[in-house]
Each structure stands twice: as C-alpha cells, then as structure tokens.
Image 1: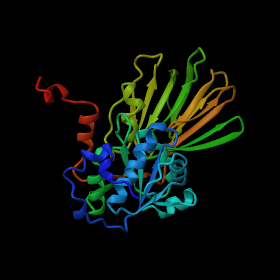
Image 2: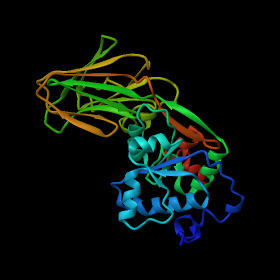
Image 3: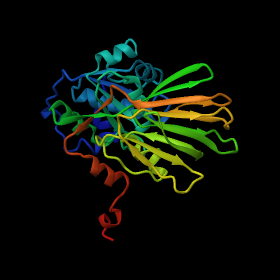
Amino acid sequence: MRTSITKHAFWRHRLTGLSLSAYKPVTHVRLGITANTTKHALWKPVSETLTLLHSLGQDTVLHPDIHDGLIRRELSDCLPTRAIDIAGFLQASDVVLSLGGDGTLLGTASMVGERNIPILGVNYGRLGFLANVEAADLADAVQKLNSGHYTIENRLVLDTTIHSGGRIVTRRALNDCSLQRSGDPGLLSLDVYVDDRLLNTYWGDGIILSTPTGSTAYSLALGGPIMAPGCGGILITPVAPHTLTVRPMVLPEHVRIEVRIAADNPDYSITADGQADLYGHHETRVHVSKAETGIRLLQLHGGDYFSTLRSKLMWGARKLKGA
C-alpha cells in the first residue's frame, strides 16, 4: 500500500497550504531523477521526494543507480520507471532533477555532457548556488515547471585538454579548472599564454581558471570577483601568489589559454569540477577554451541570481534581523 505523503515529516509543513486535488500536472514533461549515491544521509530524502512526486502525478524516470540503491535499502515505495542505463536515462529525460548540493549538480552536468538537457538543482546541501531550489519548495517548483513558468540559461563550460608524459586527458568544467601543487614543498611555476601571447608566469601554489558560474566557488574564497552569468569571460585567479601585485584577471570568453608547466616543478594536480589527476616529472601543456556546447540550467520564475547572492552570502543579514 502506498505511503501517504503527509506521513513524511520532511514534507508535512510544506504541504499544509497545497491542494493536491487542484494540482494539474502536464505529464509530458518527464523528470529524470538523479542524486549523489555516495551520501548515505541523502537516501531517505530521495525516497520521500519520489513519494511527493508520485502524489503530484509527476511523470518521472529514475537513474539506474538511484533505483537499485533504493531497492537495496528497502526504500521502495512508489518507485518510478527505472532506466536501463545512463544513455537510456538521458534519452528519457526532458529535464534532469539533481537532488543534492552544488557538487551533485556538477556531477549531473558532467553526466549530461554535450546533450542539451536542462538541469534543475534541488538543494539538500549547505550552500546551493547552483542547486537553488530548496527541498521544502519542491512542490511549488514542479508546479511552476509544468506551467511553463521558467527560463533556461545556457552556462559557459570550459574544455580542458592536458598533454603530459605522452598521454592526453580531456575534461569539461562548468565551474572551474585548477592547477595546484599537491603538497610538496616549493613554488609551482606556471607560464600562461593567451592566444599564443605570454600573459604572465605565475609563481605560487597555482591558479584557478573559472567560468562565471564558478566565480562563486573556489575563486571567490581566494578573493576573486563575482561574475554574473551571461557576462561572458574566463577568470584567472592566482592561489597564494609569490608576487603580491598579481591579481585575478577576467579574459574574454573567446580566447584560447595555454598553461605550460616545466618538468622540474614539484608534483601538482589538475582538477576540473572535482575530477582530479596528479602530474609531475614531465613537461605539461594544458589548453583551456570555451566549449562549443554549454550546460542548460533551468531557472524558475520568482527567483533571480541577485536574490540568490543575497541569501547565500547573507548580504544585509544584520538589516534583516533589525540591527
């Protein structure tokens, strides 16, 4: 027998003013459900979310790892259709619903890749710049989605190609690509070229190459500027530079960036949206440029980027408290 959604404390306060009988979903919008399968605490909220979506009559399809994980944990009420594999999951999804935090959404973006499938992030994490729909607001979000009350933003993505020691590694990054020493003593020396012209030799712990989307991530913690989505640019932010006059710099989005790293440098890592590889003892060339295909993030009406900044960065918090 199906569990009543009102028995789930996670949603009870949210459904008080929502009439499920008045909800008229447009069921041709199929939501593909994915989440971070490594987070143990996320499984129960995911199960409760699926129960909510079932009560709303929402057409959904499950990522195979999510389906199988729920079955193993006996959290299997109201399970939607299981996709055969990831390709089938993406083929069946009109919108991918990413349940988790910003890290989960970055993983979802990596899975979606160059397919033009919009992503809607539901925040179960801490900050939620990218996954900007709060879990308690999901019922309203689904109603807006099915009513067409949304826009789709095409976010810039970085294509990264690494040549080192005879091997070639390619990565896509919605947030950023970082080049940093791995903990060995000594400064990392990075020669950075822009359209084949030397920009600077950076001495220090490394650099971060960020998209506007990623400007509120690692770069922000290093003192980099916030870039609004759509402004078009690639941000270079030094990490602990040896020269104090070196500052973050915004370059046009159409440039080609090459980072040259000599073999006599200490060991270092190159990371694209959390996917890290270790390098050292070889001359390395890293080519970074704007990808031909971006990532489409779905933005619901009623929210905007600046309100997200105010909320997440607690701008004006003292004023809101009446101080």
